[in-house]
Length: 144
Image (cartoon, rainbow, N blue to C red):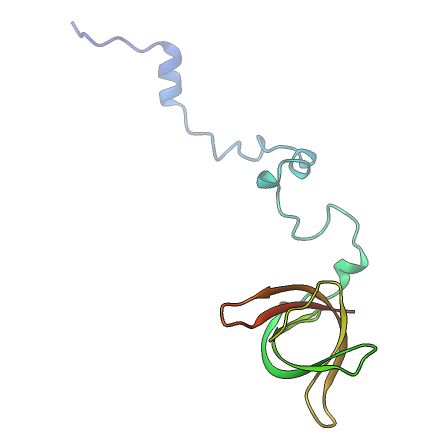
């Protein structure tokens, strides 16, 4: 006689049944409304932007800031004070430059990059300023 317990009918049926995980995976998916309002770590990415109406900001081209190494002249809007800075990155929305002095967020300046007849000039708003270990300051800006 065998000392092992005999499996029940339900245990035998489970052991011999084919694995259905891949067959019914779509049927067990949560409805789209549950996926949209789910917590952030469970949300499905809306790569085609179909979950909401497009806004003007969605239609504008987005660009990543590109590394850029050029000297620029920063000047006050109303004054004649100028400061030479090194532009580190340049993007469609703004730029980052390295400065010997800190700046307060919210201030507005004019930046001119380049000399001679070809130059880039824009008004920019200071977004952030943080100190570096070498005594310089990294200043993030956005174009106005």
